[in-house]
Length: 268
Image 1: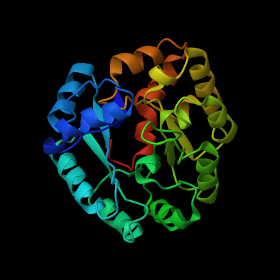
Image 2: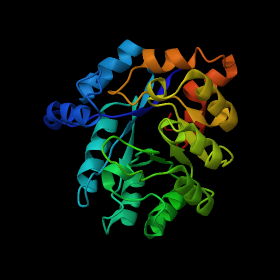
Image 3: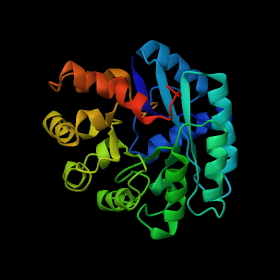
Image 4: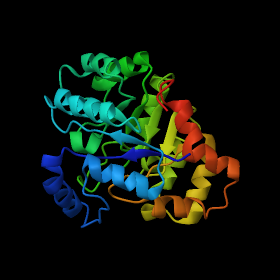
């Protein structure tokens, strides 16, 4: 079993212009699908992915309902695509939207503080986190810097503060907790039992030695395999992961068991 816990797709009408724009912002990063639902399904088949967690982002207030409707439609069409909904922290209806996300059968909530220009640790957004915690949904966020912004809207110390304030909230700090910055991820996040990491883009941003050290310190039972498709591939991400010297049990945890434990019961 292989679960890719970090993927993205876009509506067909937006994908063709969205991917080149995001690629340019990210220093002309390559992309490996066309960004569409069909393209992602073809990649899953070619790359040996059994389930994909598809992450959706509301990039401005007022957009969350439209994005969540799209996410629910994608999941309804494709039982092997497990979609996260989203809220925009600055939208007055953000906390209320969590109930709609759960009612739609979506598997969690995705935030991207840099795209949403919202500091993750801002206490103004704590009611949203409290509502997600109460709903029993996992919250996945882009952790650390992003090429879209010079500012770090989700530093590891802010993620840690939220995790401590909401100890029953399962927080997935994407990109191994800090997008290539192992020191703050190690210092602030590795000892928190409700914080998980995903591996998305680690083959690009981490050296093997620091990658292995970070997995060992966090614990393989708190790491989820992810590619960030369309921005990377299973060949790149799993290939590097399998060269680190992890045990077979650790690899199975990362590849699918942790996803099974973390997702709402029955989703996987």
